[in-house]
Image (cartoon, rainbow, N blue to C red; front, side, top):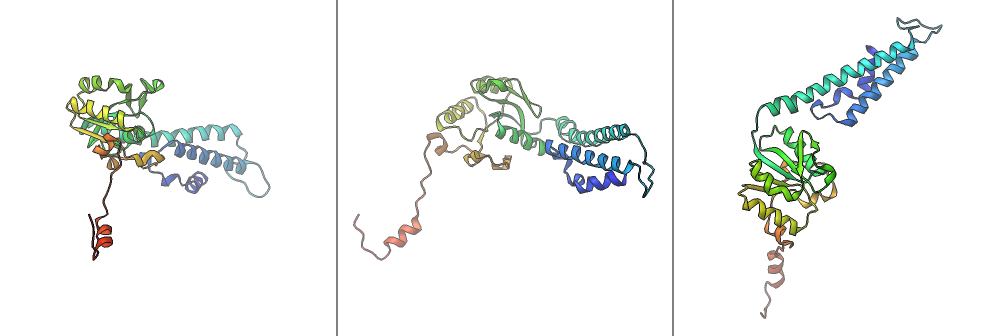
Length: 242
């Protein structure tokens, strides 16, 4: 126990936030257990300097011990994440707006994850749409890809969608306008888009970063801001011919 706890401390296993545990954390747990069992195996080898209670034990014991140690740690932690994100939050009911996410890539996945972290208080994902045929029918954190973008109108009516979030930052203004017009035509109250700044694969995409679709997004033009202060400074005290 001393060896195992010491190794887990060294690998910072106790610093993991178990609600957001991921594959990298699980791999770190596996590595920590392997190192702990290797240390115990070395300590069990006969020697002339000291004799421990584990000295002389068979090598298979450490293999079995490592398997059960890994199974117990992983099961305990994953069960906590399962309870927090699936049983408690899903069981609490659909608290937010019934939301359709356009885009089943990394951006859409991050939005679904952030909705779960916030307890679905503002948005509740009922499905995703993506033009990639390989993603059709797949599930992302329990939310299914319902088809391609052409099925948006059908899904909005069938699923009683209240909000649409466009999670494709690289989408050009023409298809963006088509999606926006189609959603508004079907009386969707909320239509939001992920800012184009997230084209750089930033890892902090969340619900707070969403924006309402502006007229500039729809017509494909950049916002022109007039520097009134600079103009005033330039012409102040001068005779101007207009």
